[in-house]
Length: 242
Image 1 (cartoon, rainbow, N blue to C red):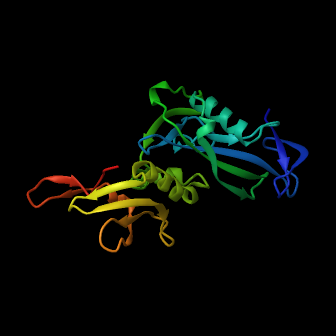
Image 2 (spheres, rainbow, N blue to C red; image 1 turned 60 degrees about the vertical axis):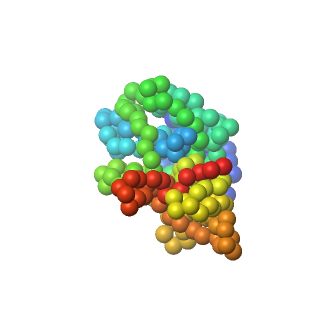
Image 3 (cartoon, helix red, strand yellow; image 1 turned 45 degrees about the vertical axis):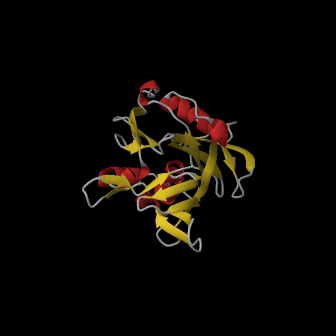
């Protein structure tokens, strides 16, 4: 039997509790947590739900669930990841990336979406029987290139909202600040990355180290691309120097 602590709309504990599945009082909410991961290659971690799950069986998802009585957000996400995937999230390299408030029957909830920077081998993970059957690391942009995978992850209410920020953080790993040389010879300094205000696409913000020192932006997806040379060879568009 799972018991939840209840919060008011300002996320203050009320001292009330609710049994999972029961109808919640008006203007009361419980706490839900979900975990996103990025490894040192900028890949994110997905888990495949068990085939016999009663809700959304046999689809790709992420670790998460409801906080139980007495748990705060950090304790809940640490437990959920350990239970479902068999390893401890690195709390020192994790943070709440965003929070949403959702009105839903039988009880609304606050959802904390955690982001962890952590390497963990799939082979070292153990899947919770009846909950998870498999896992994989994948670059975030590759998810959207697979319509079936994208559709499955969009079953998670928060996914489309969180996805641009996940892509941005992944690109920050793969395009660190520093000095780069363009394949045509000019040198540039990467100042940082941001999101395009209209498309929420990750963009590189960089400064020319010649001429007037203009500030440029470029889609991050182009930065590490390979360019075909006139002679037939291929080189990276930008190579980091320092």
